Image 1 (cartoon, rainbow, N blue to C red):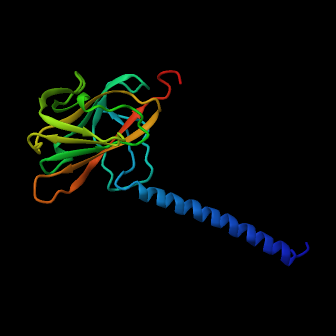
Image 2 (image 1 turned 90 degrees about the vertical axis):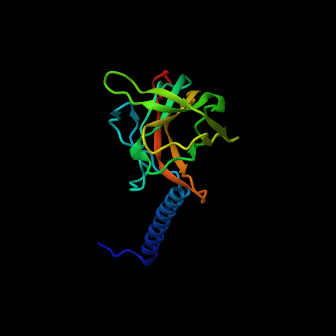
Image 3 (image 1 turned 120 degrees about the vertical axis):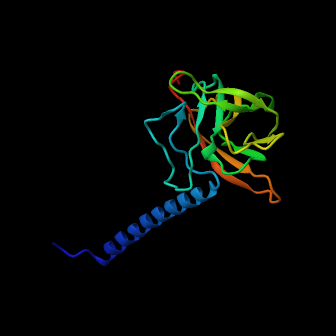
Length: 210
């Protein structure tokens, strides 16, 4: 076999360098994209009532991610649904003075403060579903971009018992998973909100025949 010419070797090296550069740029872009998601953390398995999904979906394996329990009455696109975004005793260590729920900007459903309420919950099981046991006085604010729900309970949410923000909406037109994050501010002098966990909401693409 003949030895490759210097020109052909240089061309191969140049092509290899370009390919490596493209991989490097893709990897760097991915890392920067992941960094831009903080404090939005990766979605995990969806839970409806007490039944875990068969498929667990994550952007990355992050030990700081914490999944929260929820229930939704419908996963169908554009269908009226009720969401119970729950916080159980094990999900929090302190009372909650203010609760912030971040919503993805691609969750194209209209969230109205008048359709939100704060409930003390009775958790369901095999014989019945979760339900609101007591509605608690609270003020709700939704920002203009529909990317944040702020909950101001009249009395701080205590550490015991299960509580939920109940939301009535029409499901978004887009299917997929939508990660909602819970951030809580405890009573005290320092107004800092800490991450409690995330609800990974599932909207089924096949339910309406799309």
